[in-house]
Every structure is written in C-alpha cells, then in structure tokens.
Length: 255
Image (cartoon, rainbow, N blue to C red; front, side):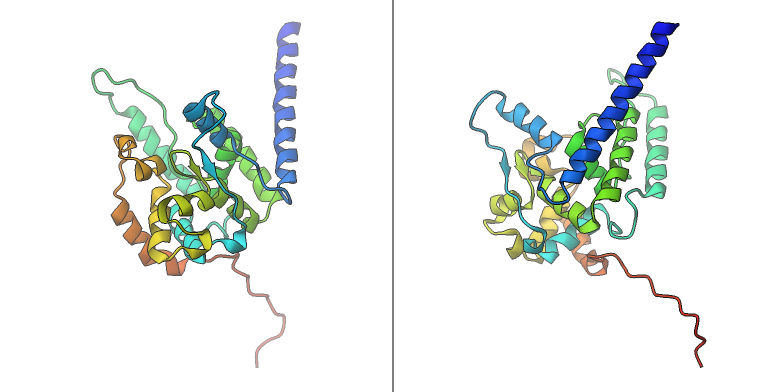
C-alpha cells in the first residue's frame, strides 16, 4: 500500500505545482502582455507544423485603442454582465449541465459514437482561462481546472485587464488571433476604427470563428451570422463597459 500512498502524494504535488505555475504566470500578466496562448500554439502547430513561416496572425492592441463599439458588441455576444460577476455564472453553468445531461441520455444514431460534451455557460473569464492554458478537449476534469484558473485570473487581474487580454487572444478565424489581426484581415482598418456594423459582425463570429472566415468549417457550426449580428446591434446600448458602482448607504435620514 505504500507505493499507492507515494503515487497519490506525487500526483498531489504535481497538481499543486501546476497551480503555482498558473498563479505565477498570471501574476506576470499584471504588467506584461502574454506573448501567446495554449490555443494559439496548438493552432500554429496544426497549420504550420515545423515550418518557419506561418500564416498565423496576431497583433496586440492596448485596451484604450480598441473601439467601444467592439467592446460592447463582444459583451453582448459572449458575456453581457462580465463587469458585474466574479468569473462564473452559476445559473448558466447549471443550464448547460442539464442540457448536456439530456443530450447524453439520448440514444445515439446508428454508427455514431456517444460522447460526453460540455458546452455553453462559460463566461469571458472562463473562455480566457481555457485559451491561455488548456486544450479544446471537453471533459469534466478540464472544466474543473478551468474553474481554478478562472478564480486565479479574477483574484489577480482587473476586469479591464482580463477583457484586454481576451480581446487580444481570442480566435477570429483560421490563424487569426486578437482584434488587431481581425480588424486588419476583415476590414483593413484598426481596432479603433471599427464602426457599429463591423463590430457586431466580428462579435457574431466568436462562437464559430473558423466558419465565419472559411465556409469549409461550417459543416458543424449551427449559427446564422446575420441574425446574431442583428441581435447584437439591438442590444449594444444596454451593456456596461465598467463595474457599476454600488450606491453608498447613508446613516442620515432624509428630511
């Protein structure tokens, strides 16, 4: 039994060391911009392998140089109360879990492989945690690690910094990462120059960016971009770009 106890201790030590690595890395990002993400590196390897030259595009843009149109559009598309929650929307996660339970209980069609899938319910911080450190593989262990990293991100970085890193690292098409590369690729403009329609179009792409960029990736994507774009345009005015200040309580009684 000693070897089992030793193995458990080694696994626990490895797990703790990994969390410390994540915490240190996140701490550096208070003032240093991430050079790449785990998802970017995986895509670079998929597209370019050992080639020195690669079509992967990425261009960092400071937060204040990104159009507010784009910021609002992304919030509507991905996480409309990002600046109000603490990293996780429990109700949305419960709905996503119930949806996946129902899906997994359905009988698979002939020749189809059954597969447990986690989808939906992720906040911008959770998406960022996955993109920065984890793979696109979907399972409950990865989801648990994602939640730990989400907590570290929320504890260490400001909401504005989290949003800045997200906008500069999220995928916007095959080999296109960050709003700097996306605005140049699709509209030959800078992130500051994006108008309402352009911002809404780019935000509508986020659930299926490869499909938005290339039709060959649309077989598995169930999304109608014009409808989503219209929804985003209609709701951009209601989202906040900063935490909503809570009114201060006063002990004085109004006369």
